[in-house]
Length: 429
Ligand code: HOZ
Image (cartoon, rainbow, N blue to C red; front, side, top):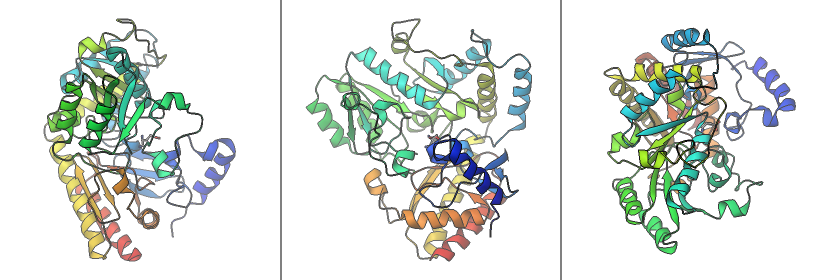
């Protein structure tokens, strides 16, 4: 039996100090039961809790840790940068370096603006979509999550889906009236929205591979169809690559699938573990952003030297030959192994992986959209989550989050994880 005495003490105290005892709802264990594990430190593929237990970590700080936690080269570059100061509030050359790397890697990005989180990037990109087209309405997909700004809290994924929350109180109806939704992978629904709102839709935003409603992949033709539909209707196509950017491939999902959107949002990996977001796209659109143009968007800590340093070093590491082949190999082995383990135990499962991102649903597939994802057995997932913790494996505490691997996950880590899954599924059967 896992000893989590100290975690429990800290979390009990935290609940009196912070709503739900956490700084972000996805960290609470509300949907899996029990109390969150309080981390003490992270390194490589592992996290250690305050009671001294070690876990093989498949959350990776929700995505940034693709090179492994606290990579020595990232840490050493940060030490050096730290000596020069934490924030300048003035231009710094490191911004040019990271911007050039992003522009070179991501097909749609000709210019980029750095912000501090994926939420900020998505907020800004929506304003930019509207500024560029002079239209207000936007199409998003059920279960996709684009941060917690008002206009995106409509049928949102991630914590909203995990907690089964209705659209959030405090969000004015007038704000979400312009947010139209369609089921993921349903081109017909998007066509109908365009037809019913002719000349009013600024654009379509989506996760090109969904990670916030569990792991859902685009069906063949879906991304291509969206590209055509948006072009036909004078609307913009926006890929939210906060999760998939530099994870699905060095150029993100757009490079992997060969579909170039007009605008892209990023975060997580490009900050190498420090708070960073970014949005970018065609230069003619990006030139609308202040001070080049009239669309206002700003940030005190945006482009700060520490975040830029961690991002640059992380991308340098990722750019080395063989990186994505290695990530794809271990992640597929993990994903196939998880599914085999469930089936051996006679339990229904469907899932998959692309590059360093994976997921599974505890139901028979296929799962092509959020509605179908809801067939997953969330009660069984709660028990699985606990059983995996007991066996030293840390999974996202939700049926509706993707899993992440890293370059630090060794073959032995994958083997150990699969032994744990086999044992855990057998205990649930
Ligand atoms: N967006 C991430 C989960 N899907 C993690 C960030 C958070 O909501 O805390």
